[in-house]
Amino acid sequence: MTGMTLISMGEWLTAALLLIASFFLLVGAVGLVRLPDIYMRLHGPTKASTLGLGGMLLASMIVSATHGRAGFAELLITLFVFLTAPVSANMMAQAALHLRLPGRAKPPEDAVPERRKNRKPSEL
Image (cartoon, rainbow, N blue to C red; front, side):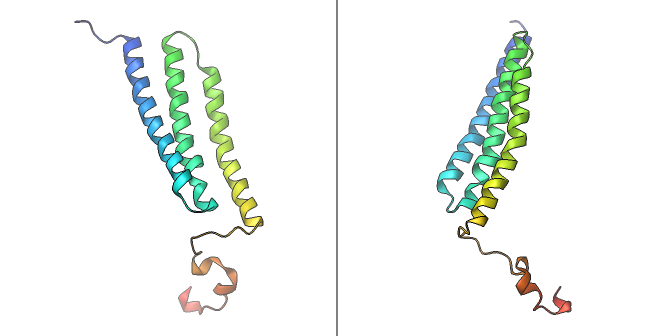
């Protein structure tokens, strides 16, 4: 019985990363389908799917490293996704606020400035 080689360890690590990434992608897809309004639906693709895509690209970098190729393209894709996903989610949320799309969650009482000025200083 021989020991684990670098390639077989890379394959096991890649398989584990692909399973974890698939789980995050599934959670993101379910969140996108099941959540009720646009503000809540933004969390599915931006949080869970970004982690899932990052895990898949990390697995791809490991496979390319075990075969003697630097995973520079995967690294650039990962950086691009991690930089653009929050920005695009913020822009979609601002567009929804600009269009005055209703949300199902009620904002906190102190989030609205008009409600804050009626409070006593002892309540602040």
